[in-house]
Image 1 (spheres, rainbow, N blue to C red):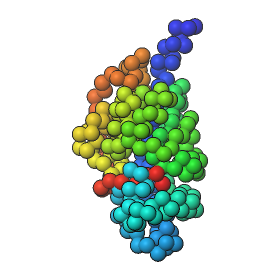
Image 2 (image 1 turned 90 degrees about the vertical axis):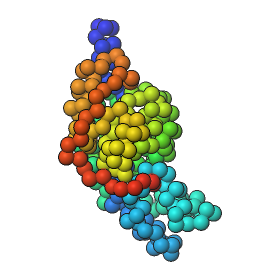
Image 3 (image 1 turned 180 degrees about the horizontal axis):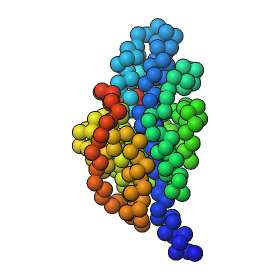
Image 4 (image 1 turned 135 degrees about the vertical axis):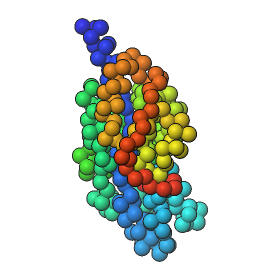
Length: 242
């Protein structure tokens, strides 16, 4: 019985997922939130441009529109109004629910590690019926690696070079999807171990990965997958602590 339990555990990895542009297409919601913030503050914000730079902390985007001494105040206000304007318009990315379910079907744990304000991240997931085992917010790039390591994640799935950096800092396998601001070439150059066209390809990859690599899920090399019929990526890069 002990040997069977040990074997089963090796086939049940903890997999981390990014949120914005990995599990959810947050562009419509963030666009609406920026327009509302602009109307309230009287400060022009190019929301069309801002949503091409999703990824890094919200404060980096706000710095394009507000003086430094207002960024903290405006950032807090943005997060306050975010649930009103951003949750309902935001859809799940293709394959998001199935990707989470694939991990759990193996007996593994699916965790979301995101730069987004954690309460807002949880609202998105609840609204869309996506049910990870844990949600950890407010972490960007290498800081994500701390949460991944703490939760024993051996794989991290994301759309941004910052997600690749987070995976590598946790010594986890970096699985990248070019569905956000970074294209396949950028993700590969950043050190992604596996590149999938989008999350619809993830369940099949995960099943083959778990079957072939029991006992050494974190470090064994995997041949990258060539993208087919990718989701059209957005261009440019930056804001997530939203």
